[in-house]
Image (cartoon, rainbow, N blue to C red; front, side):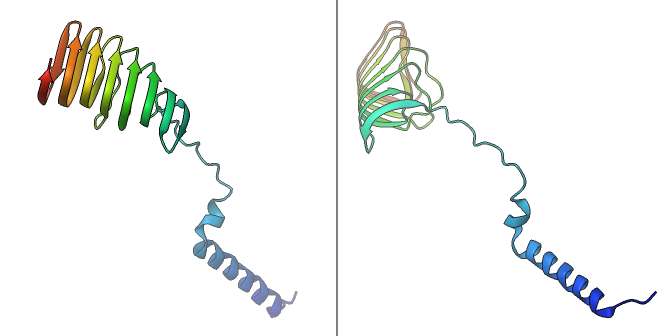
Length: 147
């Protein structure tokens, strides 16, 4: 049995090229691995808006206009009229400017303007303007205006 040296050198060369390809292009070796789906955002809304200006039904984090929502959560900034029905979720940096109406308790880091809450009102950093709450009006920061 004889060995063909050219046959070994071709296999060696192909193995070296394959190894170099996998090392140089790691995305090629991962391409067959199934990917995890992206986590779903808790901010789901139907926005009739252009560049965040218009009407939003749902939990839109940014809006200038009219926003109707079941529960405020992950709010960044709302300018205009914000109507919410249920207790708020977390909005650590949220800011609502304008008219904020809540069946139970409008809440954000900063509430500025007219705020009406059937149960109460809670601001984490600042409450400015006119605020009327059924049971309590609370700010963990400053309050300025009529409460």
